[in-house]
Length: 315
Image 1: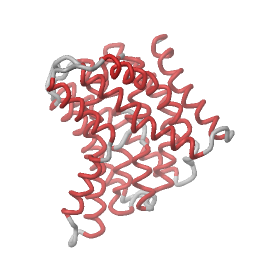
Image 2: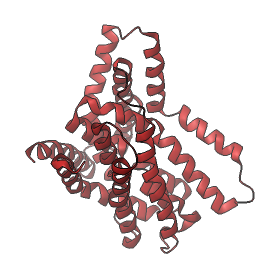
Image 3: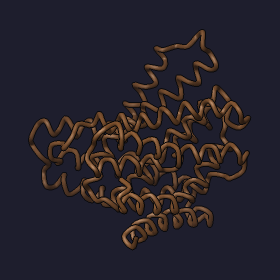
Image 4: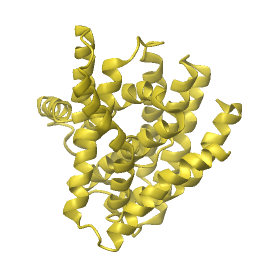
């Protein structure tokens, strides 16, 4: 249990520190946006690129991991879509924003630092396999669901295809992973100067990501319909990790560390991309923003319990 506390408390301590800095206005919103962009555009991509470029051959194929993780998302997504119709705060556009909120966890700013802090660099492989396709698939699914609910007879699959392409083309994490995979094929390795630069950026990725997450949390509000927020938190942080665990335990076989990382990522609270989707479409914004704020706070407790359970032989 001590190792869990030593890992989890510093992680959430950096988040709280960022939140306090934002609330006290010691850093302005432009600085917060710049720091977040640094994390997404440079620090985490550098970490993933360096790891994939230098990694050994995979111990297993990723298909079982993808089936368990994204299968859990799919079931949770469908159930949330059905439930959303019973709540006014979640029902807009067929529940697309609500479904996005339970599918899109904070795997980059919170899940990645937690997994690396607790499991070390070996966790980067399953992290990269999940993160590389996480955002494009869920953005496309949520956009498609919204379009079907609003314009089922005049939906433009060509436009949706373009959105998916530009989502991939503009995602620095996806680009870094693809570039690293191609670079590995050359067999050239990394020049010591380049390797050192990437290592320095990688070292900065975890604390910067956590501090940036704290800064961003100050912009979310708990105001809204609490029933809708509660539904999102329970579906995201309870049902989804349970489904991923069941799939990993009974349906597929993956390396033990991969399974633990997958369940940990599945248990992450709702991420910022869900808020961006809700805000862009002006749908379910109060419930989604509240789920991010409260869910992130609760994660300090739920993550500790989850890690303890997995270390005790639960997975």
